[in-house]
Amino acid sequence: MRLIRKSKLRKSAGNSVRKSALITASTALAISGVLTGTGSAQAAGNGPGGASNIRGTDPGNTDLLVERLCNQEPSLTGVYGAYNVDTGEFKTQDEYLRDVFGLWKPAGPWELFRGWCGYAEASTWSTKGETVRTSPWIGNHGSTDDKETFVSGYSTKTFAKKSVGGTISLSLAKSIFSGGVGGSAGYEWGWEKTSSFERRSEKSVPPCTQVAVTWTPYQRVVRVNPIFQVEDYQWNKGDGDVTTHTWRGRDASWKTIYSYGYYIDGTSDKLLPNGQPDGREDKVEEKLDPNTCAK
Image (cartoon, rainbow, N blue to C red; front, side, top):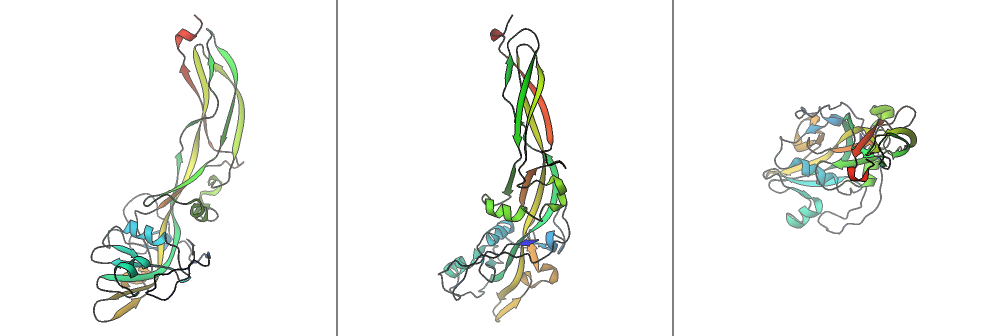
């Protein structure tokens, strides 16, 4: 699991002024366990990276909670969040200090936490990409078959998308999917390993028909779940602040949490062992207007 720690210095609790500072990155926890398929949520501690699923266990839209929590720029001590355990509402630290309480202290149903976000590989599978035309159309307006040389070309593609929230930035996608993540896909995983081809082939063009060459790329998808490792978790039920080091004070299997419905998929065209794009080439035909063809 890769923990991305982008840091931002903070002043004392209660101050609304924040100063951007240092950016660091650290690999802190090993990925353990693999989530396969798209079935029901995992038991506590059995999710990606050994995380426990808060979706369906805690109130509110927990997918959006984790997305907003991990979309923040962390301080040198992590990312911060506030959670209303009655309504399920989430607030960032700045929002909590502005809207709820001027000090970073738990109040009423609001519980506070601090920790680190990371990305754990959950599953991987193969699929077919969108078929694209890779050559110009060549038409035969005659009355007999014709032979033509077709020149077709293609370059591999990679992209990423989130299940909730806005679009994922290119820099974040690179930090997640370059390197170790996707390694289980072997040579097939072609993230940012641009490969291309240009081919010449002779094909028959029937009369009153136009022909082109298409390419259907074979692709690999690697899914990661954003996860959150708890450093401190606080609440106050009227008898003083309580601080624990697991989500909502649960057992050790809740040291790291995720929300099952929030994931990021990285997709890349597959590569063959020789480094060439993997896929299928086809010849496609379309009839021409008979009025434009020889009788």
